[in-house]
Length: 107
Image 1 (cartoon, rainbow, N blue to C red):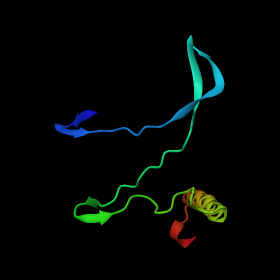
Image 2 (image 1 turned 180 degrees about the vertical axis):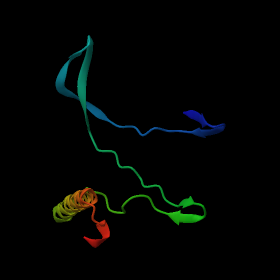
Image 3 (image 1 turned 90 degrees about the vertical axis):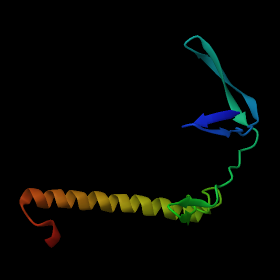
Image 4 (image 1 turned 45 degrees about the vertical axis):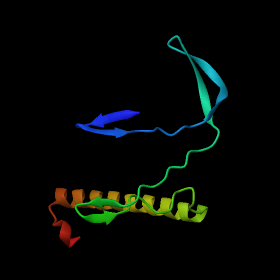
């Protein structure tokens, strides 16, 4: 498929995804619909050799979530929740100190 963006033409070949018809179906606003299930999950290849202002970098984590062990996933989930809780507590403490008239740095 030939596309162009801001005057630059390029070819785009969308990935082919094979699906099977699901058993769940229905009608919504007069239109028939049916769920489709993937036969095989598509594997996206990571983009390599990215450069921003002359500096090379790689996008995202090198290890996908599917490749992480359950223990790594649970550790990451716990850490993120704990960090959010600490941020929320610090924010509430700073607001309270401001209302009372204390300097937040002394707390």
